[in-house]
Length: 227
Image (cartoon, rainbow, N blue to C red; front, top):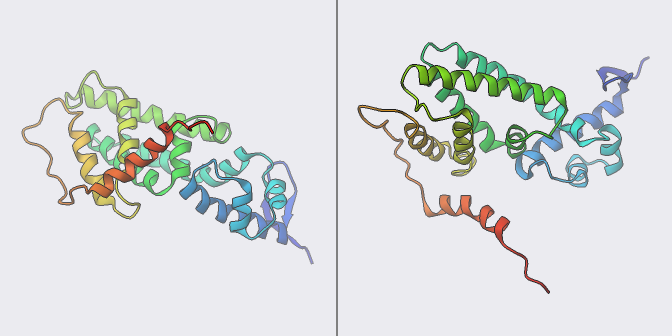
């Protein structure tokens, strides 16, 4: 009886059942670790979470970009599809805002995905291609919204994307209301005019929300004292 599964690694024969089991354990563990710790988390940490040896992780994914591809390619393909749906909205600004708010929640719940979206160098060309497709759709929505006279003419797509990256850091992971409130304020600031401000959700930010956002910035700017 055959001991292989249909799963294949790129350019390789099918994996044995035990190898496929280990591969899935590694992917499940890496998904959780990267979501919390980001893409700089070590393979040793992933191995401990998966209950396998570090050598097993390196054998299955000898290059970190292979692991990033395996984890995030599907998520990015879903984002491309969601962006394409937004592009079909007859109201360009509504389509753009809906997509950006959806992206905020994805990034808030997955630090690794946020890093993949923010910069090149994570993953291989497939992920870069998906990221480029998303950027092109957002660019087109920005141009349409400006043509409609809704969005400021001096705004570029990266202004919106950067602003929403910052919004994604607000509130606890399980507190989308804080991000919705801040996101509403931020997006209103990009408009050319409005008869009245958009109504805000009732949840005002707390001092803890402010500290949560500022603490990582404070740590990153602290200069180590010489011993």
